[in-house]
Amino acid sequence: MIKLSQQELMGLLIQLSIMLMVGRVLAEVARKFKQPGVVGEILAGILLGPTVLGMLSPDWFNLLFPVGTSSLVLDGFVQIAVVMLLFIAGLEVDLHIVWQQGRLAIVTSLFGLIIPFAFGFVFPYVFPDFFGYADEGKRLAFALFMGTSMAITALPVIARILMDLNIFKSRLSMLVISSAMINDLIGWLIFSMILGMIGKGHQNITLTNTLLLTIGFTALMLTFGRGLINRVLPWINKKLAWPGGLLSLSLAMCFIAAAFTEFIGIHAIFGAFILGVAFGDSEHMSERAKEIIHQFINNIFAPLFFVSIGLKVNFIANFDFMLTLAILFIAFAGKIIGSGLGARLGGFRWNESLAVGFGMNARGAMEIILGLIALENGLINEKVFVSLVIMALITSMTSGPLMKWSLARKWKN
Image (cartoon, rainbow, N blue to C red; front, side, top):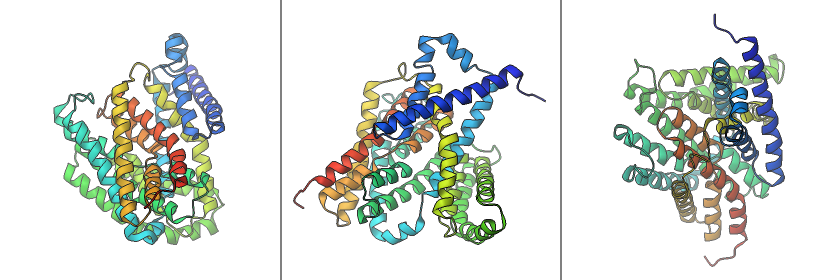
């Protein structure tokens, strides 16, 4: 049986402690400047990774993060962190809010999905060389991924921005939240299909079967599965120790769903996300329970993932100014035009419609997770990945101030 040596175990424990400590310190610094904590955590990874520490002292970097069994174990921690991050992202999706907004949410979300998806698809497909993609056989999958990465949003980031602006319960805020929910559901479904196209799944499961199983799993979990969870949760809350019983069983089910979707040919995160939606939509899943799960994952596992981003890539060596500028332009133009136009057609004033577009433009953690999975599966190169991370950070940092500026305008309508 293979196991960690004493030195490897010590090294792993030191890695985890340094990543958590440096990530926490810089996350708090970021919050002092009114920025999301994820900005500081990614910066911590850049400082500890090949970009800074690896360039200033390669020996120390190789000593701290050696390639070997301990690095595989650390990667396992990171993979689990990603799965749990998508689970709590799913918990944020409230299907009741989507139904309440009705047609307006559907129109806004579809415009906010289709137009940025079209922007993100067309440019990379027509100019693959500019985006550093040489594999002609996967050109369609690459363009579809870029379209998806431009279309998807970051629901947790958007919710926090709206709370900071003190407009979370407003009609405009509910439109942004519900539209983002629909965006995320459709976007993750599309991304799952893309992974099936590039042959990531089980060798005995065809692409057609993968797509059918994906749609079937989604429909089953959001109907029968959601109803079953709603019936089981009262028993869990009453019979088992709270909140330990709920925490352990919800994560156990999360891992089972993630394992199933990984098996059928799409990434484990999709199963975790859909199960999170099913759990979060239950009337017996209290806000306090959600907060406990959020605190557990966001303060222990999430920093490990975001710090690990900086450990994987040299951000200086792989920074391409023109590529980053192009991706930023596509991201801003697609989301602001698409979502803003959808809100305007729904009856909002121009300044409010623009605020909806700025709100929906917040990307954050979800695009970074998408980018990392695409990088690990050879769908994008390191330069595109670095540009996507920068885009995610800039859109998250500018969304709130731009919304505030837009809502303060008094334009003629």
